[in-house]
Image 1 (cartoon, rainbow, N blue to C red):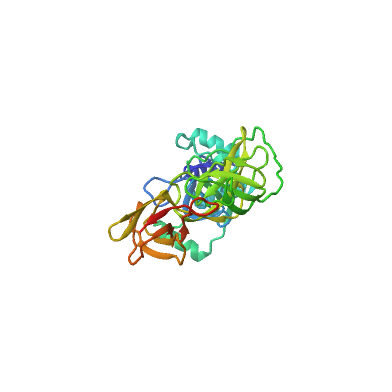
Image 2: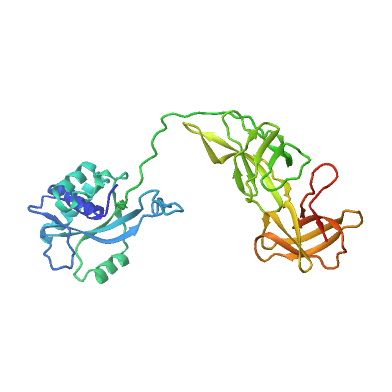
Length: 404
């Protein structure tokens, strides 16, 4: 495609085209120039002057290259400006021999017989003119077409009286269209061809989680560091695929994966006490060698379960206040509410003691127990409503126990 030298290349080619055909006029020594009619440089006499007096956008091509860049600003195609060039051919010679009219007829005949500038002529002009060598006008997709322009007497008088400060001479107007000028920006080349491809057909199997329980004992509470089982259908990926477990936004590798059950170990201290979510993710393995692609695959809906706190070692101490102090796992987080439930070992209604909302993370909790009668009590802590279990999990409880 042509570059910023294209306009000058069109003008010089027009000069050469008219010069090559001026001989039929019979005017001896006639020359063709490209000067300003009212400039200081002498005009040819006899001869023809080719003057570019106006440039306008080409209506058909003015928006043909939009958009040139993508949303990230990367170049999609070179910006291209499409222009129409308006020329005024003026003729000089001996009026008594009608040389002006003879040269006008020769020029009009040449431009009518060759309405498009030949690529061979453009290439010759570029090669013969040092400053136009790299214009690339001969490689432009569209040929430059030269057509007569009809100017009214008023338009012609304005052209000579306002633009040109000299007396009128015989003239003719032409339009050269279309000149396509591109930038020198480098456009990325096309993508490399695909050397090989693999097509894989997979059956549609949406993983579904019915419930989340402790493993291996579904009746046991889910506590910090426990192993949980996600029970449902289509939970394990097909052969060669990957299965991932997402617990409360953290991706964990499963310990075992079967179609109806997937087990995973909860890292100690990784999650806060309270309601958590579980989800199965099966990313597709694509490429050679196959590699998981997180953006492609299937996922289950989320299933909820409760991570229950535990009183570490079952050890509860009575401290001044009166209050009870104990360690809890996982540690309670700032913003969580702590409530202590005391159940008399001898039976009767349970008592609740409010520990309030924590202002900082803490693994050791101290809860006031004002007004609690003397006796032995089973102790359970509720953190955001998640209740610690009594031990053992089956049978009569044995702890945690505290004497008040």
